[in-house]
View 1: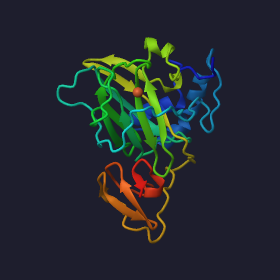
View 2 (view 1 turned 60 degrees about the horizontal axis):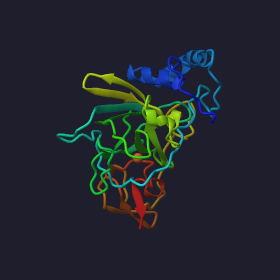
View 3 (view 1 turned 90 degrees about the vertical axis):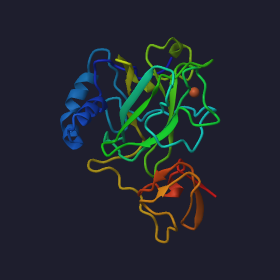
View 4 (view 1 turned 60 degrees about the vertical axis):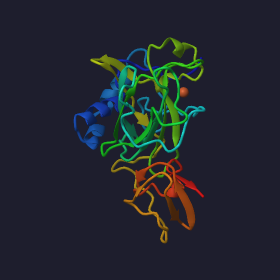
Length: 276
Ligand SMILES: [Fe+2]
C-alpha cells in the first residue's frame, strides 16, 4: 500500500538511543560519536529495510506533516498540562525531544498541542485541551493530558504544530498503537505512532520529532539576527496575545504569549505573530 517505515520494536534508531542518552544526561556530541554503529546494527537486522534519510541514515526522516483539520485555534495558553480539576479521562503524559536533521536536539522549539476531550469533542469556544510550550535547554518537552476520546471518522490522535525558531511550521498528528481504527483511518500514518505503555494511574507516551532543519556537527543553528532598526520588538520581552510590536517597519500582533528570543522575529514566526 505504501512505503512507510514500520516501527521496529526492539531495534532502536539513533534517535531513540540519543533520546535515552539525553534522558540520562549524556552530552549529545559524545552520544553522536558513539551511537551510529549500534543504530546501524539495529537497522541491519533481518526484516529491516533501509531508510531514505537526508542526514541520519537510520530511519530518522523528518516527521511527516499532516492536515491541520478544522479545530485548530491560535492563541492557546502556554502550559505543559492540559488537565483541569475534575477532568475525566485516562491520564496521559507525552514526552520526547525535538531534533533537527543532524539528530541534534533543539531548544526553544514551539510545540502547540490540541486534542479532543474524553468524549471526542473539541473546545471551540475556549481552550480546554489546547496549550503550547517550548522545548527546554535539552530539546525536551513534556505534555500532561488525557487520552483523547474518539469521534466519528477518525482514529485516536493528538494534533500538534512544531516550529523551530525562524523555521516553517510543521503541522502534524500523533497516533496511538493498537487502535482498531488505525486500520481504517486514511490519515493514519505509522511513522507518527507514539510509543505508549500503561503505568499506574494512566499511560505514558513518547514521541520524538525530527524537524526539517539543517544541522552540522556542533551547536544548534545560529538564529537569524534582527536587521538594524528592527522596531519595538525586542529579545527578552514577554509578549501576551494581542500585544503589538513593530519590526522592520511593519506592525505585528502577538498570537501566542511567549518571551521573545533570537530567531523568533515576527516575520519568521507566523505561529507567534501576525502581520497587520
Ligand atoms: Fe482531530
